[in-house]
Amino acid sequence: MLFFLYMWILIIHLFREIASFCELPEQFQNSVWIDSDKGELKFSTTNMTGWEFQTENGDLFENWECLHTSTDSTKLLLIMVQTQNITILGAPYTAYLCMELKEITSQSYYYYLLWAEEEKYRYERISATLSSTVVSDPVKQLCFSTETASQAAEFPETGEYHVLVKQGSEVFAKQECPSTFFGEYFYIVKDLESKNSYCGTGNEVWDVCTDYERMTFNYTICDTKISYSGNGSVFCVFTLTFGSYTYHTLYNEDNFVNHSNGTHRFTCMVSSRNSDGSLNVSQTPGSCRKGQTPSEQPVFASNMSSAGLNMQLTPRKLCRK
Image 1: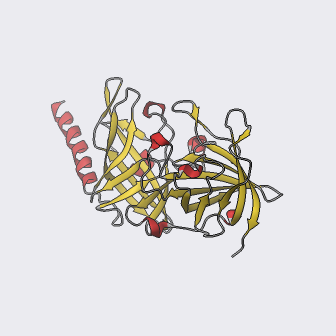
Image 2: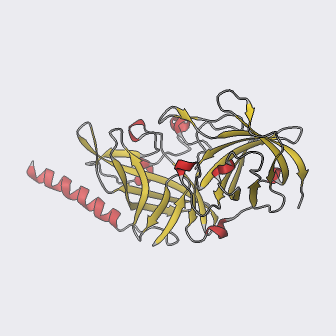
């Protein structure tokens, strides 16, 4: 019996030693990237810190180690393992991130987390196994596949992507904004609860005509922070269209951001165009959320609250390239 126990411990140790040989993709090694939700992620050759999550009892974890990487022509699969065990009902568990990344530019990526929302991790998409479990096939054991029909309902929606921008190279991550925004628009802001319009008279100016890669907002009439920007200027870093919805991520050009005063580094907007040329737009700090639409904000499962703004834009002057 002791022999078999020794061999089992040896096998587990062997697999963990094999995992330790995993190196992060070269473009991430020894660099800092800004995550649309998590802030600064610091990468070494094999480790990542900064991607934080909490358990139900409030314990905080943020240190990850490379377990597996693989690439094909369009995407990079990166599986990270948490370096500390998590205790659940007295048993030790090991947590994993399964990240499917796609390049936007050489300085920016967007990614999905290929797992279900887990209530015990405050609805983060994190997989976990008993720490004694041997992970012989990380992709099959730790990641969802779109080919698995039974998992379809738990698979992340199209808009549930996250964005990474390399620190110090933000300017090289700029992309054109969605073409539906090319122009100047009047806009109004709608209250999430009552759905009534507020803020100014509808004469506020939303400008994507002066610069097709940048959105600027005139706060003279309405001081509500669009895209959580104190100085009223953001640039576009990613756009994804699915059906009639356009998802777009914006980077706030403020020198400093402070969540307590209502500013955030990233915003995700969901928009749709009406037959009269007007736009319905919703915004949420960080990444877009499950269930977010142009006219409705999601309710976050972690705290049953909503966040963001709903706006309606009316064309003032359209611009064409």
